[in-house]
Image (cartoon, rainbow, N blue to C red; front, side, top):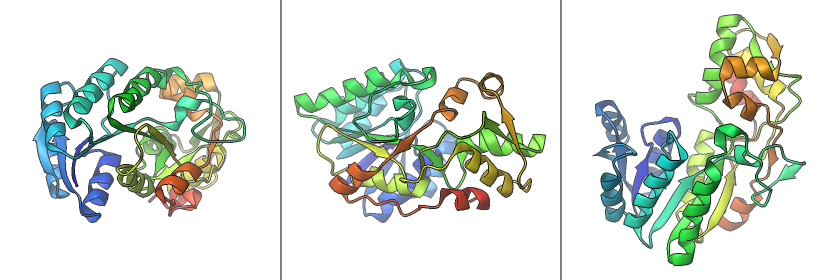
Length: 286
């Protein structure tokens, strides 16, 4: 299958391109500059020069493809919806896979799934109208699918490194919001890349949370990150207000108490997460 992907030079995108190619797909990838073009080309994808604001480029590239995977992080909901619309117009009746995230559900009451009510923190509140518009295409013959990854880990550990590992090394103690009893819905980057590939065959209008099914506490994660950083056992509790000052709006997302099951993706797509010990990976720094 010929797949057009946005965000291909990023943390998740690089792994997804490699996974697509390993499964026998051919890939074109949006590249906003020379560095991004070199990155996706080195992975075996053909670069398509442009950014999310280049709607004509997105539409034309989607029209050449049999499926689209949209991974790039938009700056606003309006930008994301405009890009999604251009690509859905281009792909027509081909599969369009859109990226959301589990944070939109807010705190969960026990173990939740895709039927949980939305209660997003401000940092991701813009996602709801975008995802609703994307999914409405199923009523007009489109093939939209939404994948909602949990907090990614493995490899570069992008968010965890920026907000936990790096400041922890600098301060000599990894931050932990409150007592850290809240749980994180984690997913390994390799596993969620496999989910995106599996989602290419999903039914129109499907929504899947991409989680590993293991939901450690935030404090357990901070302790594991501290071990990887060489500051074993050194974790500093900070208030939510302090976290907002240090991390910005994403602090409210890190403070969520979330537990999710990957049961729907397992049952409908046969997707089974291979990485089930996130603390060991976080502690190993890999």
